[in-house]
Image (cartoon, rainbow, N blue to C red; front, side, top):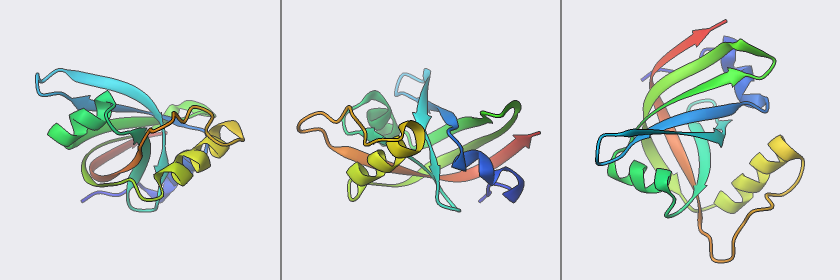
Length: 130
């Protein structure tokens, strides 16, 4: 397994958007910008059950992503990895914490009956620039 170099961990503490690539059953990739979190070992992001990336990751847990430093777009982290877990437990609190990081307030787009989920990604290959 690979890890994020300490020289680039700060990117995950900033308001950096990640672009995640998932692959559907048809083999066609899809890229989506997401808010991102890092627990020191795994990359975390939050979505709602039933969304396209949720369905694609259930079918194929491989993922690639890149995260640019918002202060220097030539500095970034890229990785390939696998989903090693997903949980609904604490997911609504997590999306609110991410929203505070990015917007300074609770997540305003929760829909009635929506089930949030945290995806945990284990990096397998990591590269950096800058």
